[in-house]
Image 1 (cartoon, rainbow, N blue to C red):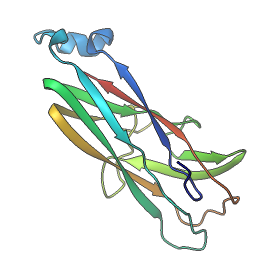
Image 2: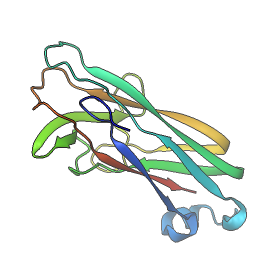
Image 3: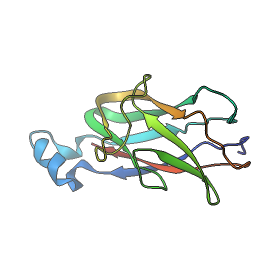
Length: 158
């Protein structure tokens, strides 16, 4: 599906079982690790058209839903994207960048990441739990005309 400039970051699903993660497996030793089967449903953040003359940030939202067959604790992490930085994620149009970031809150205070570089993960539990991903592109950028995109990997650990 083509979007007007710039394009939304594409989200990819990457599952990782809790028993494969040493720190989580040790913390959950009292709970049977094979008891839950969980999955993700991801709707990426689509910013639409960026107006370089606007004095306001361009904000948009995406959604992540975790569905488990039994109530289970989990953590959701997002990687830094193609540029590898949580400080400011960057969409690309060839060699042309456009800065943005993803947040856990409406105030855009907590960068949603993997817990590194000042970012935070989101934890929860349940059988069908939804989360909003808050995206924001700073005003005042002067992007090259065209479509921009980034690829974010969503990791569910349970």
